[in-house]
Length: 83
Image (cartoon, rainbow, N blue to C red; front, side, top):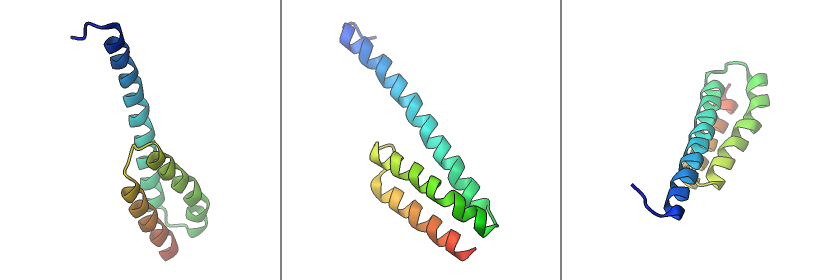
């Protein structure tokens, strides 16, 4: 167990950040799944920019790696184009 005040604060702040990161990551994953399940091209085109935005935000905050974000965006773009 941490003994210093700063270490205790670091534990609290890390936990807060971890929970926020988990929430944002899970939200993006759910949006990606929803987009992949879509069969209507019009709806998919409407939802596509918001999903890309979520992915970009995750990459910017280092929640996911930049290359993973690029791969996800590429796969989703090809999926939407193929509808």
